Length: 496
Image (cartoon, rainbow, N blue to C red; front, side):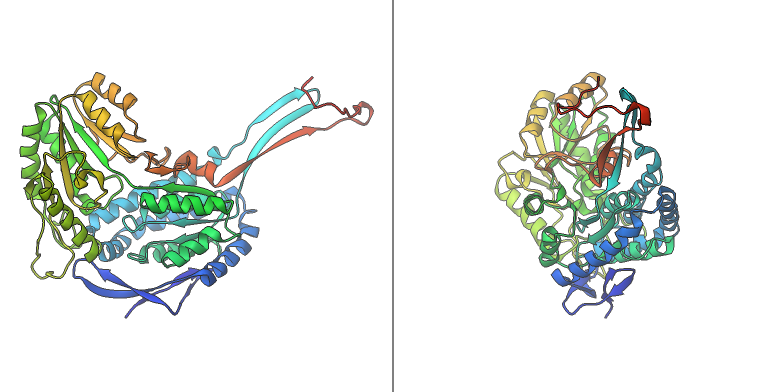
């Protein structure tokens, strides 16, 4: 059986402990991934630290040339990488290709860092004195990433970290680890020096080793809120910078003036795409006033039309969940919702796909008359379950969203500019879509939510990523002529 190794200092590295990697569409084990710990992290940090000595001194031109080459390789190998992701995650190949494209946008942003990294200069701030500033890389940095986007989320981190002169250690999810190794091979082909990008696979032991290691300057994390809080607490206690993005409960509000067919079509895709295993998935549809009955009718029809099957099968719109445990958790949640009083409009439980009876499939589920005290509303289900909450007014919808502990993404479907402006100003959420169900920003903006969706204050990628992976220096300069020496003063310097 295939073994998926670490990638350290430009080469694959095997280990003794391994864990299974499943094909979610068949339910069968297809590979083993090595599980690293403190020793493997030590080895990766040592390699990254050696590489940092030269990579941090490389020219900006050299770094951007590597990024241009890496970007082109991502284009050329998009189909191959998409199939690797689909086979381990379960999402459709087209969906996997979509995440590669969105991740590639960050590489494109990194290709243009020459403009972003420009410092500033102030002439003659005092007599004969000038001030300028510039930014320098931190050193060895690390990323801990989730299973749901094995290509895109790491691509939100390492291109910017590497392009700004850092070296990087990636700890991907052990559920779908192969995309990380594939990226490492592409970097090598792109001309990235050995040791600049490293991959250490593993579980909690590897995570804890990264959080505590004195040779790692910063940690980027995307995952659930409890683990985000743990990562932030542990890493900051060890003096590291931390980006920690947590969970979500994203609401899509539909006003009576919205085009219900358009809104339902996009909410359906936002709720059930990638089997709902997205931190930006639409998990709650908030039906306002008279929109409710018509919206439920259209959502029911569209949920029943979703084509579920293996991710590599033509025509499939939604694949399986990533593990058997995830399948059971989601189906139990639907049962709990019914027990607590929700109306199960569409029941996706018990779905079997011909030829893939052991796969981790569940169909789209649609729940109506959900209230805020139900588990289906309170919990991040991370599966193809859409809950409908009915309210009377837009203000009530805004209050509902603001009372929720998460604040990652939200959307409003309306034809009213006034309503949209009021919504985007009043709602306490970091990323907002107006007639856009999944408002993931472009790479030149930063990605991050509010409240329990972002622990700490550092979003990811874009300009915030550049600031996170670098620190500023400010230089005050005087070049006096020999005959113009100024006596040193013992008072605090001023700009006179």
